[in-house]
Image 1 (cartoon, rainbow, N blue to C red):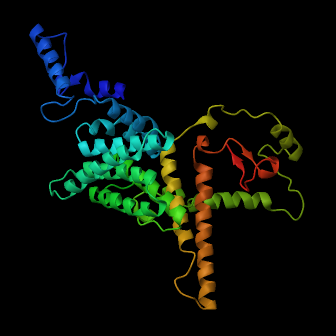
Image 2 (image 1 turned 45 degrees about the vertical axis):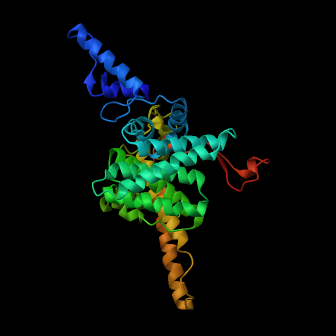
Image 3 (image 1 turned 180 degrees about the vertical axis):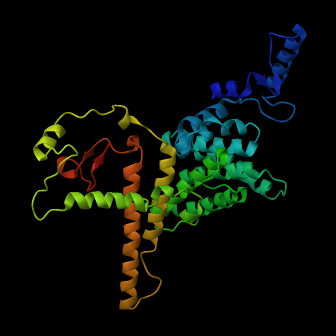
Length: 368
C-alpha cells in the first residue's frame, strides 16, 4: 500500500506538490509546517480528508483487512481494488473506513480469542448508521454507498447465520444496480459487482436458492459458449467421414506422395518438436473465473428448480423430465467447453482417486 500511495500521489501531500528541489527555502519550510499541523490535527487536512491513520488499533485493524480479508475479496479482480485502491478512498469516507475496520476486527475475532466482537460491532454499527443516513440524502454519493454496502456484506457473511446472509446481499445488489454496474463494468464497479455476485452464487448453492440476478442478465460476453461455425463443423465432419470410409477393413491411407501405411507409420514415429512455453500460457484467468461463475450460477438455478410447484400428471412429468434432461446436457456442454478452453494454469496438475488413497474418506478425487 505504501508503494501505491507514493506512485499515485506523485510525491504530493494534501493536493500540494512537495518539491524540495525547486523554489525558495521558505516554500519547503511552509510544507514542513503544513505536514506538522496535519499530524497534530490527527492526520486530517483542512478539507476533512484524513491523510493517514495514526491510531495503533486502527492501523492494526486496517492491516488485517488488507492482508487477510481483501485478498479473497479481490479473487475476481485483476486490479485488486479492495486491497490496493479502495482503502485510500476510505480516508475520504468515514463510513467506508468503519466498514473496513469492522471486517478487520471481525477476522481477528475468528482467529484470536483475545479479540471480542464488541469492537467489531461498534465499527459495524457506526458504518451501518452512516450508510442509512447517506441513503436518505438525495444528493448521496451512490458509488461510496454501494462500495460500503458490499464491504458490510462481507462482514455479515463472516458474522451472520447462513440463512440471514441473503437479505444483506439483496441490499448491496440494489445499490449495485442503481450504479448501473454489471459484468461489463470496469474499475470499482467491476470489483463490487463480481464480489457480490460471487457471494450470492455461493450462498445459493449452500441453501438451494435460485439467484435473484439471472446469469443471462449480467451482461457477460457468452460467446465462449457459442457452437462452432457451420463451415468448420462441416470440414471436420468431411475429414472424419473420409478417414472412416472402409468396409470393415483397415483403410489404406496414402499421403500426397503415394506413400502407404507403413511409410506413414515410420514418419509418425519420429519424435515431435513441441513448444515448451505453450502449456505455461496463463491467459486471462479473471475472465475465465467470471465465466465459470456464470456457469455455476446457471447450475445453481437448475438445481433449485428440481421440485415442481404442483403434482404433475404423468404426461406433464415426462415432458418436464425431458426438458430438464436437455437443460442438463446444455450445462454439461458449458462445463466441457470451459474445461477445454480455459488457460492451462487453471486446470489441475494432478488427480488422486479415492481407490489410490486408502486413507481418504471422500468419494471425490484429491485434486491438486
